[in-house]
Length: 110
Image 1 (spheres, rainbow, N blue to C red):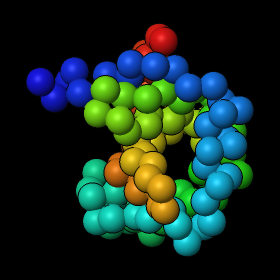
Image 2: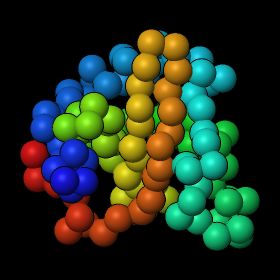
Image 3: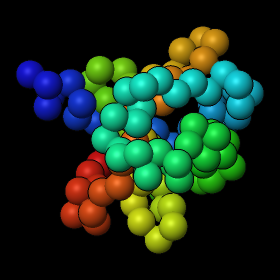
Image 4: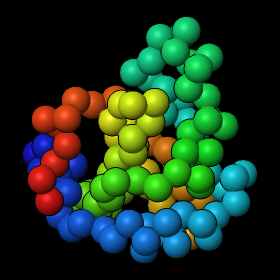
């Protein structure tokens, strides 16, 4: 079932996640067309791949977890909102699968 595969199975220590993501250069963090599929054209001009890279490399998340499907769900406070990012972290690159803003009640309790 799809919901089960995206459920967080393990909380990841914030410092461990930051150390992991810092192993990658900016050009190793990749956006795909799927990254932005939830956004309208105007939003795509604001939330660019470069902006997402900056968030991943420079900001500290308040929560990170490993999902059953082996993707990372990482949560940031960004512009006074809760930003959820889904990442596939490989040996040579980080794929930003998608991202979106969520409400406080949508933050998982792990």
